[in-house]
Length: 146
Ligand SMILES: [Zn+2]
Ligand SMILES: [Zn+2]
Ligand SMILES: [Zn+2]
Ligand SMILES: [Zn+2]
Picture (cartoon, rainbow, N blue to C red):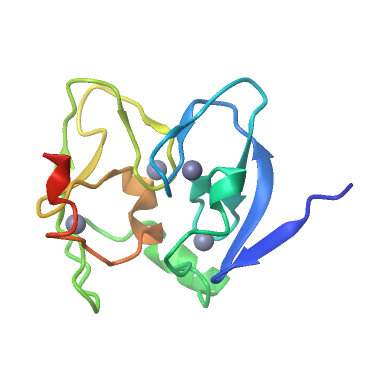
């Protein structure tokens, strides 16, 4: 069977065999096991469980994006990207322990400046994922996480 695309709020999820341990971006639980299928959005690269893909509560930020737009942001500098809605305040961060990306669920490799951390909410992502993240900083909604 050809891989089927499941469209949910603009995301285009395709069942994918995960080659590395990943976290579900929706429920934050691990997607366990060898050859386990995750559902990955072809546009914003977010990875979720099959059971979670229909519950994802946010729209795909790449929904309307065209290909040339993606090339444009590819190598943009580290400058702030001023966007609408409260954007995350990302700064480069060095993690002392292995850390997984909150967006695509994959491990952030390296020893130094592995990723970006939001200074106002507990979100950590790859630099390469920044352009795919929704600008929806959830300050105040995750107080129980302390
Ligand atoms: Zn998406
Ligand atoms: Zn999940
Ligand atoms: Zn944030
Ligand atoms: Zn990532």
